[in-house]
Length: 431
Image (cartoon, rainbow, N blue to C red; front, side, top):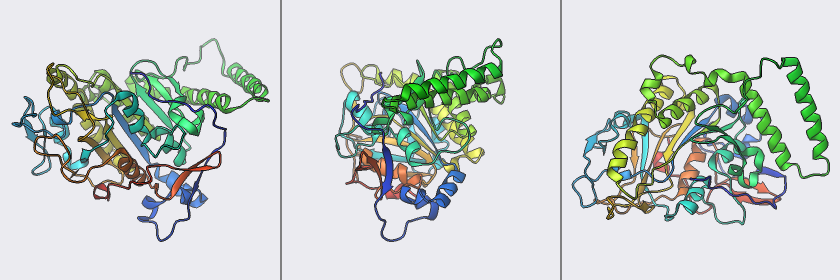
């Protein structure tokens, strides 16, 4: 599937962040700080010290909640798979996710997402942008938003990296109206940018001279031109150059013995292992994408093959982050643009179903071992409170210490909310 992002070409280069005046106290000390407070140098230093990070795992096409996190065996829509007990008393997952079931006490599950958009072309960008009210601008994807709203760690690494199948490169469209500077550095198949190794025939001194000439040429080229894309090019080049000093991040011989076996040698396993390495190095926002989850036909056999490819490495990754002390300051999000229909179609498939589906979370700011929301006995609809993507974005920002009610973007002088005005956090999942 192509990248579902668009660019609003007429926007100017100035995109700053401000806040409304906050009345009353801010909850939770540093955990409750909005971006307005982050602009204070003392607070900014404290947030940077905490090194809050995000791992965003995107299962493009729509994984079935009924075959994973919200099974309904024995019902009209249940399908052939059993449910199994998890680490949480009384909570069951599908039998295809035994490793995730074994770490349910470390996870936070929301079973009552209801997002109303059943199309990939509109649903993907809506979900990944958080769907604020339409303001006539193209909002940034979550990774771009986070790296804009939080000061990145000063570690010489790109703030936003995307591990994905296929080609890599600089993905400037993710940034929306924030401008290309806040795009993602894509690692195609988890590999580093091409030409990351300096040829033996090129000495370090000559490489430095070439780089100075490049900078001088770019400075001259900027004169009299809009510099948003030129600056983005400079930034992407600098990110790639930084990675030349961290080639260890892509060297499989540096991995502990057995890691590849635990994560799996299939693409998603390799990519999640690469994501762990990037998080360990200090990358602020790591996105991992897996495709081919759109199971309109042969849903059950496809899930039998594909679900173990996310179950095993996801559980290994959460355990590794926990063992290394990274889960305390890393927010993990595992989701799609919607779930699958309870009704099984004539091709033994499940179609698009945004009405009632699940999102899996772990880590920073969340109550572990919690299941929020529920669906009806046959899984067709939410039973009780429903949560749209705006609620989830408020919740994600809250976990990162950003109050989405008091923090806003400023785009060409226009204040814009960072999350949907009419929605709020999913309070029951927050510490």
